[in-house]
Amino acid sequence: MINYNLLRNNIWHGIGALSAILLILILTTLLQAYYTWRSINEENRNRRQMEVNVMNEKIDNLKSSVATIVDNSAPVFEQNANDTKQVEQLLFSMVRQNPELLGAAVAFVPGYHPERGQLYAPYVFRQDSIIKKKLLKYDYTLYDWYTEPVESKEAGWCEPYTDGDGTYLAMTTYSFPLRDGDGNIIAVLTGDLPMSELSYLTFNIYHETSRRGIIILCMQIFTMLLILFVGWWAIVSLRKYNKVNKENEEIGNEMSIASTLQAKILPREYPKDSRVALSASLVNAPQVSGDFYDFALQGDFLYFCIGDVATNGLGAALAMTVTRTVYRTSMQHHEPLSRMVSNMNQALVGISEQHMYATFFAGRLDLATGLLCYCNAGHLAPFLLSGGDAKRLEVESNVPLGFTEWEFTGQQVQMHPGDVLFLFTDGIVEAMNPQKEAFGDKRLALHMKRACENGDSPEAVVKRIGTALKHHLGVDNPNKDDLTMLALSYVK
Image (cartoon, rainbow, N blue to C red; front, side, top):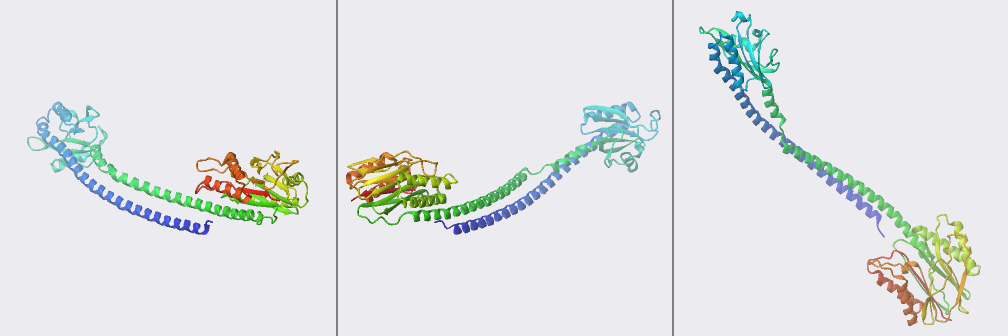
């Protein structure tokens, strides 16, 4: 018998141990994720700093290149400052030959070229792949890129701004003050560098992250989620397992009750009459089935029966109890067996609400004459070992008890001294070995023939079949159905 309380305690101890293991795994994963992420951040900071240094160097090189272009071009513009057409041509060449430049302009001091107006500033710029020329229409003398070199008389970069006439882009400008032969500032030569170039370089610094770090973090998150799922699944499974064990405990209690009922309805002592010899055996299946047998001595008559209820468990035990009670009650009336079985069937049909029925064979042996009266209710025909031969007793094909209303037909046969009647249930012939081979009618008939040839007593017949069944089933292969036998001999 399974100790379900111990099993339940072991289950909850297992849940506790598993919960502790999962908690440790989760904490370990979180701690590892924290330190890994911190290491990744540190690595990214170091990498970004290195990239910033590299990008700053690239930016400085780019600005230095633009400044060099403007500085080297300034002497040419100073020499041709009075020729406006030449100035414009120089601007085209300057922008065309230097793709780093967004644009270039020569902004003359007010009134320097009166024929061109008070303010004259030709501007050549790059728009997509086309180089265009435009005259600045706004008052450029208000912008830092013009005022700072004029006031400081030195070249330099101005703060970033948005061009309001020309490219309409954010840019920074390198300005160089142009002088005449007397050293007076006559114009400012500019070279524009778009802010998009600098922004793109800066954006790349922060946009690039460590793919390895992201993969590691994703793997750790996935691992933690997997651990949580496994833990949840394990706890749910253990709860289901505990529920199943509780149900099994209830079933086990039911089986215990059924086994007790089945044992109590079986007769404990054989009739003490020298004119008859009996032997019986019932080997329970793991699930209590509905087999039973009974016998009782009433004066010179031996009443006996064997039956198989078509259900299992507690229901089978209750059905057996009811059937046996009805049998014992009917037996007291000393009616013909056909009438007795018909009355039993009528009573069982009336109380059966779940259509439980039983195959049944009832017999009455007259110990004074050896006349055997019997009535079959859908049960297997017994063997009669008589005159050196073993034959199946002829039986009417009546319906099982409790199945439907029925008028049963009785039969009779004369038994002689030494004859043996062997009754059995279907569990005997249906017993299956590990190779899925049934014991079968032929094997049973062969053993009956040998028992008849040896002149076996009822006890020897039951023992012979029991040994054959044990050998057929093999070790660790329990029978699936009750194995029930009843053998009796007319001695006189």
